[in-house]
Length: 81
Image (cartoon, rainbow, N blue to C red):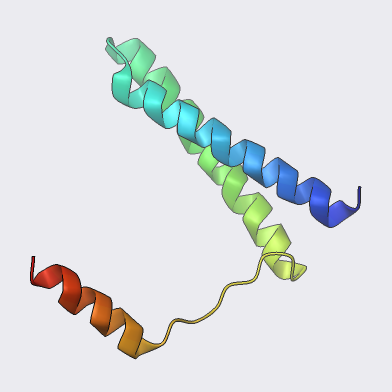
């Protein structure tokens, strides 16, 4: 497994962890549990951001600009509902 695949797998795992912590935060029944999950979520989101930035710097996570006409089309579609 090369470095790119390894880091992609780490990012996917980190996203999964964030999802679990988010649900833990939402579903917690006491403020102590809520705060614990929320703190863990914040830390995990920072880790996810760091991993993403490293991947982006290496060209391993590319994004593309969306045409403004497509954005306007979607905005119009959902503003009519």
